[in-house]
Image 1 (cartoon, rainbow, N blue to C red):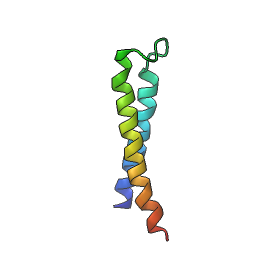
Image 2 (cartoon, rainbow, N blue to C red):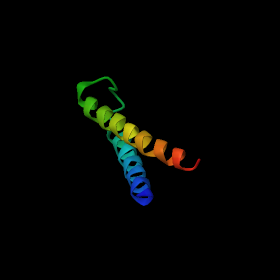
Image 3 (cartoon, one colour):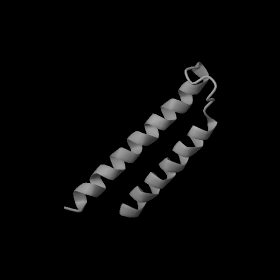
Length: 59
């Protein structure tokens, strides 16, 4: 189970990097970037939800 969580964290980090590459930096607040922002936020929440139990298991 721990390997699955670490795999999800790595996959989410790769997706975040890819989305940061896709964002149109000339117009950050345009409507075509909303999807990219939503994916980044979802992946950050996924990482946080996977990291928190890993820290609690070490105690």
